[in-house]
Image (cartoon, rainbow, N blue to C red; front, side, top):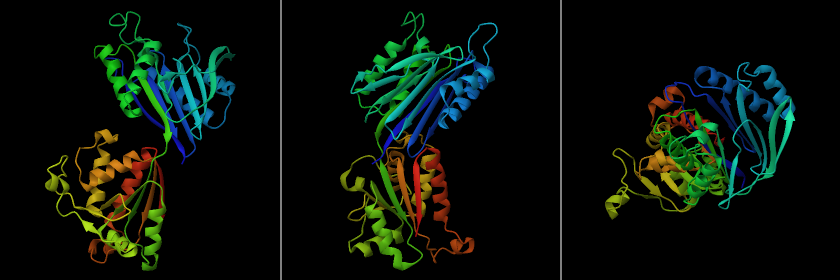
Length: 392
């Protein structure tokens, strides 16, 4: 099981500004993770452009193996000091994680990374050196499961200045708040939202500076596998079913014909829930109107109808950023969306048989199911999920 860095971030614009002067770049791959936070000098359009350039340069060079010296030299040549204030035009923090374990951190004029492990604040092995006349902090350290890392721009440190906190929220207070929130079991998304709301409240709803937070949590990857559509060759039915059953994580079937095929291959009874569970038990939440029934098949976590469920799932995902944004319904599409959003590694086993009962499918030469699947794959990849597609 691979290790992943779960992440979420949110920015608050300085009051009265349409653009944020902070920029974030995150690249998450199968075995690497890169997070960059840059804070442009000042606010508004100019700060946004400068921080964007800085983040892009730093992300590209560090991700391609560039040294700190090379990155700093490029930034110094591209973004010189402000002639009036003698300050760098943009600060940056770069975190690179390999295989979910080996972390490298480079910080220039930015608040230090906050690392919490087992509820305690970790003192990172930071070294400070001069690079091209600039003071740079560096650290290399090993990560453990459930470590939480938080990057902030200095707008967070200044929150509450002159109010609840006479000198601003401050790094130490922010770290303490993060430790307290983590004790409640929040994930990266929930922690990000909580910190952002708290920061906005400290600014009394009108941020005095651009304020950005990136929350990251190390954890084992969550897997899910979906089989949808029978194979074009009936002789591959058993192979498709076995591929699903031997896959890691949640096992899902989408499609009436597909579920009947699986029941035949497995020699098990397919039990269709024509009467929704909430009608039998008076339990909540309830499925939404127009949702097709689900079914039960031994060895499977979820069995649903095909086209309608996939279409509804695509619609739900387009409106939800995280699992918490989904409705509290218990219908097939919501349950499928919930499993997919919770997963990091998703295997799609796609049967290529054309339904002879669907005239439109024959005319197009492609099923409506495949159209929805393409939209689904696009959405999942945009969320940085590792999607593997196998056609049978």
